[in-house]
Amino acid sequence: MNTILYGDCRDTLQQFADSGTKARMCITSPPYYGLRDYGGEDQQIGLEQTPEEFIAELVKVFRGVRDVLTDDGTLWVNIGDSYYNYRAGKSQALVKQSMASHHQDLPQTCPRRANKLEGLKEKDLIGIPWMLAFALRADGWYLRQDIIWSKPNPTPESMKDRCTKSHEYMFLLSKSQNYYFDVDSIKVPTVDGKSLKRKKSVWEVATKPYKGAHCAVFPHELIIPAIKAGTEEGDLVLDPFMGSGTTAEVALKLGRGYLGCELHEEYGELIQKRLSSVQAQPEVEVTTDNPLMSLFSPLLIAQQTLCVGETRL
Image: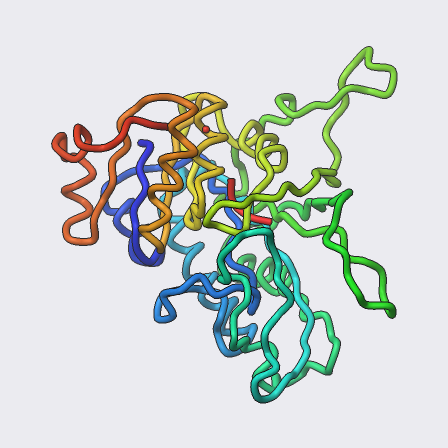
């Protein structure tokens, strides 16, 4: 437990599955379509030439996730949408999306702007979240609920022919018809504060700026209820797009362990820094040479900085 494998998650998830490791839930936020360039063009997800190709790659990822989940496990996916705006030539760059000092959220080429996409008109909302939800359902997942992440402090927009976008989706899916869900663990106070009621499907959570090396960050408050409902203490929480380590951080704070995949090994130092303030425990760092053997290597464990409870906008 408390392990992050670096490399393409479509490969590293298989390593978890082969080792027999099982997580009770997965919560993640994949890269959004045509929004950011994280580097590693041959492996990164999000800059496919069409929305359909993007969705197909995510379906592959979540097949790997399914192999790592327990039979009563759940999948929670936060995914945002985007508009189709065709821009030929060199005018494809997007408005800066975050406060980060780097430029990974300003890709110079953007497939959803560079390509003429069949079936889409200029200014059409693509519908990425529901494309993904339906594709996962068709691939065997049980699509149980759409949760609305309502943002009281959304990013300002210049468009004058529609409302400012202030929400994203988080989908709850399950591996089996019957699955673990602790509804009582996330009850909320009634108006008078004298009793509790079930949490509703609209979650109001403010976004928070993050100036670190990773620009797309889960607010803790968004994933705490999901982890509480989807796991018990001691369970493992999986995030195949670990980013700067928020999922791991929250899992540890709630008495759970974590499993993670991250394409960019350079985020390892950032993750270690964030987790080191939570708890001092050895974390296994796995190289691409022989990751399965490394999972159980006492030498690697001894060499790592001791640490242990984010993902995306």
